[in-house]
Length: 164
Image (cartoon, rainbow, N blue to C red):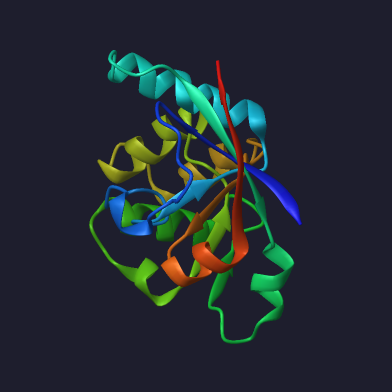
């Protein structure tokens, strides 16, 4: 079991994959991370956008090994920022739905450090090789996007919600 975190402004005891926004890095799903600090930063960011809410971090146990070991589960994992990751994220942000082919996608976050590079590439200010060159120097953060509600129900267990 691994401990994972979800930054929010609400307690999320029963995550729903269909509630998320489309056109995110890995599509419409429920996003968690193994990095508590990353979830805290995201919770604070959301709280600034939604002043009625207070930042909090939801904590879960995720049986990731159970997911990966079941050959019926369709898992995509990006170990680094590379051309495959870049093409996938840009495709999702442009409305492509290649994420629907998977149950779980894991990889780096297109956060503030990476966001500008992706945006510059998407609008044609830099080419793919320049974007990949810039990304090479970034250490990926971690995000796991759970896209299949049955997997959430089976492999993700709510532990607690901590206010920040």
